[in-house]
Length: 169
Image: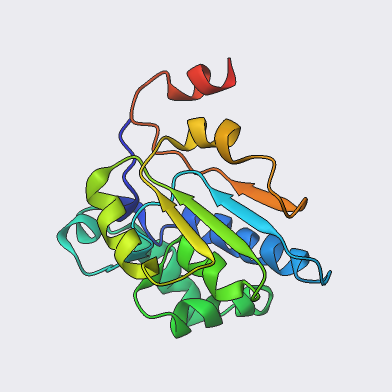
């Protein structure tokens, strides 16, 4: 299976994981001490749901578009962020929107074409590092964080059939 974020942005599973991510990052902010987030497979950071890739699958219709119409109260925080942030926000954009001044984010993306817009988005942001590297390799290289509190967000593309088994084995 080949899972590129642009084709599936805004689908039901994407909304579920992003709503949960928002709740988890919010939970870190309950304590005043800084935290670190490692996004191992960050993608481009933002997605235009009107592109050919997104329209090809049409998955956003049963996901974010449906949620923005029905606006379930438990998802209000997440949905407000989606509306406020412009183009459909990927995990790095959501995480950054929730961070406080002492918190840090490291984004890893292996696809060179996806790293370019990610670097452009966070170019002047001292709290965000963008790495063109394997997210799996980054687990060993970037952890543990100096903050001593952190979240690792793993959303791999599963581009090779044995990727999950390889990483878990």
